[in-house]
Amino acid sequence: MWTRATGVQPIIGGGGLIAYHFGTDGADMVWTEKDSSGAFIATAKFISAPDTVVGKRIASAESTHSSHPFVVGCGFAARVGSVGDVSGVRVVRLSDGASWLVPNRVPDLLWTDPLGVTCDEVFLSASVTGVAIPGVPATSPRLARVRLDSLGPPLP
Image (cartoon, rainbow, N blue to C red):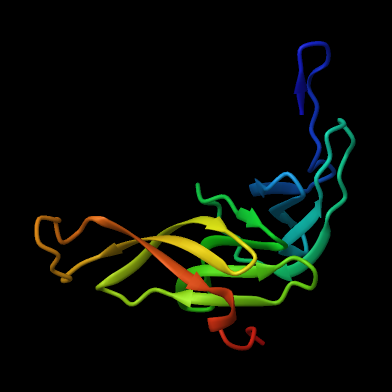
């Protein structure tokens, strides 16, 4: 957190903890945190005071850093990532850490970013090749709406 009077005050991290991929919708905050025991997805309620947040670890996470933050909405978070050897967009329910993967279909469909999450859908940007739309380059980004109730049972 930053204010003119106090300057920068960290709200997450310290004590050997690294936090990254931070996202918020103004109600919930979500991030990946890494320490000597591994990498985890953590969440906490949004704060507006410069207090140190102790997140609740809700799921294991890949330990790689990237420039893709979580997109948060309505008790869910989504970000580009992978589960095991399968890459795509991971959707996580914040109440219990249940996760789903919207997989890439290499080489013709690659999810590039989650753009928004509602109570019913996740909006994704995709790079699609080999799909002809008159007047649109074949590799143009596309927008997809994926219903949360279409994702099936959560990952084990």
